[in-house]
Image 1: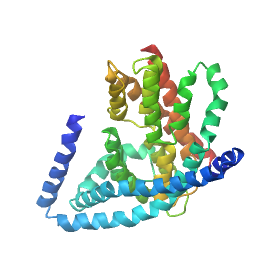
Image 2: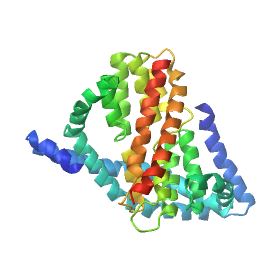
Image 3: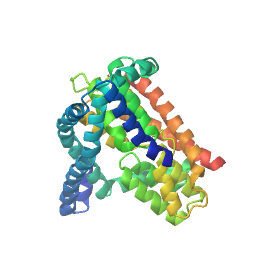
Image 4: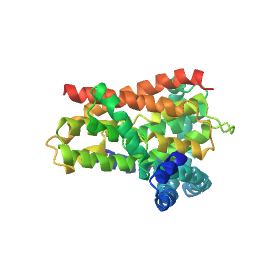
Length: 170
Length: 178
């Protein structure tokens, strides 16, 4: 995205120019805003640590792999290619891990194969739900997350299903 | 989740592996915080400048109406929510996070419980509506795809579907889970 790369710095220049016209003390305002950011960062850290520790435990212990294995029969029954299951399971947990897995999948099955394209759409259209939840709720100390996680996971599942269907029609 | 992982490690008789994984998780939190710190300071500073110039109020006034359909009790978070969604749309994850944290701070009522608006904001954030999935396209190019961009439209449609499903289920589940 070349356009976006230029657009954002230009937007910042425009912002500074506008603030100058409005006689804002830019230096002071920037420092005040940045000062507010620091305690915020520190308060997020413990929640991130708890969440990432749990994720790491699930990943490296093989619990996620076991979940993939358990889902396999059900997935085959609804006509889902078993090659895609690890990606679907991993996606909400880790962004970097799913990008690595996507690379592996493309290398193994071919970037333009059905599996390769479906995998790409899957990764592109969904988010790392657990990371988002840990970071955003952690930052304000919310522990009762109510419907946020199930609603996000349902959304992700629907997105994955639609994405795979679209690729099949392509 | 941590307990499930430790049980799996124990079944394999791999206690050292368990401890190593747990430490790795905390290491990850530190490096993530450090990686976030730079952009967070930058965008918080810029956001304050925009605020003092009156721009945040303007944006909030424009977006209050459309956003109130999704997040009725959160007029004061309209500006950061809009900026967060816009940054995500243009694929600027680094800029999106500070706006998201600011939005959460304005939505928070300090009772440790997610409001419907907070849950809706998370649900919106979980559906990756992005103009171009640049990371995925880069990987496809690297893996020798003949047409790396041809997944862009299905990806976009799929994330719209995901957003729609998230919004609907967030509304419905919000009534069930108090």
